[in-house]
Length: 178
Image 1 (cartoon, one colour):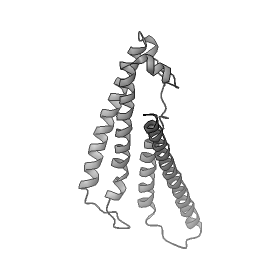
Image 2 (image 1 turned 135 degrees about the horizontal axis):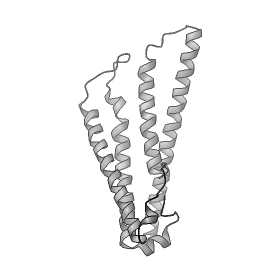
Image 3 (image 1 turned 90 degrees about the vertical axis):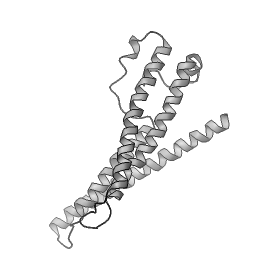
Image 4 (image 1 turned 180 degrees about the horizontal axis):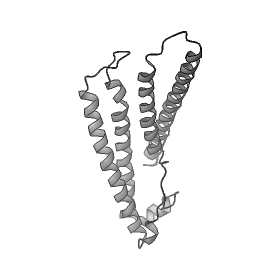
């Protein structure tokens, strides 16, 4: 069992590294294209009629791959858990966290379904490159699927903590109010 958990932890780190690398490459591409656009305004050596189209694709992908990276790394920001301190007992705190995770899963599952439908059903083409807009939209179901998988994983962990809070407290390295 420990070997399986170690393998899953390595897979988590590898996926997070891939997502972070994608974000860095997308950000570098956005920076390069914006810089090129500024240079071309002063030295008009080429047309950049494709500028908006490419930036739309890159920004969208950056947002969604970044969101997935944050979700996988459990590094999303929050305003703090001000409710848990009012709940009686550790089990109630874990139940609360399970409910929050369930609400997140519902939202992400709906997002995944509709983004997949959009991607699969689109027939539009981009203006400058005449490529299918499905390529623009593909980042949404990909990252939505990743986030659904990790939400299910988080729910499993929270459910295990609800059923056995004493072992979850002993094994947890993070605090209840994350």
